[in-house]
Length: 153
Image 1: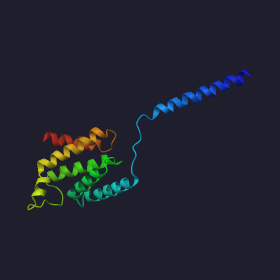
Image 2: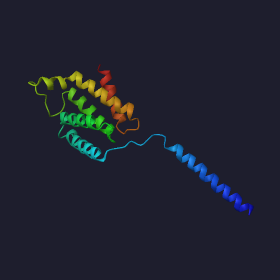
Image 3: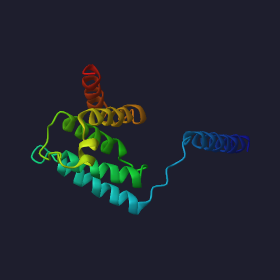
Image 4: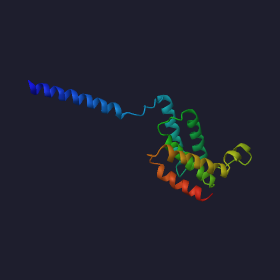
């Protein structure tokens, strides 16, 4: 009888301790992600990766897809990846790399894709990867490119 009582207390104590440990584990609230916006953002990211590939080098297209997604859905689950693509695309365009050229007749394009502004954008996007997403697999490359951009200033 005493053994059963002891066992019962042990089970209750274990349940209480497990419950309190589990309650403490989830400190950050989960982000509610809209499935429709998430799917649309993933599509934009896939298209951006296709444009970013070495054969295409369509960096203006990457930036346009990023801006559209960031404006509509900044909580996208893969925003670190998109920031990395936008940062690298901005950097490459600032170095006059890529197959899409800036229209010299368009004042808007000349302003948006001016090398100084592109470098500024690259620093902003890549800094966000480093600062907001420390666990991102894109962080090392972002830090390396940031060091290159900052040493050139």
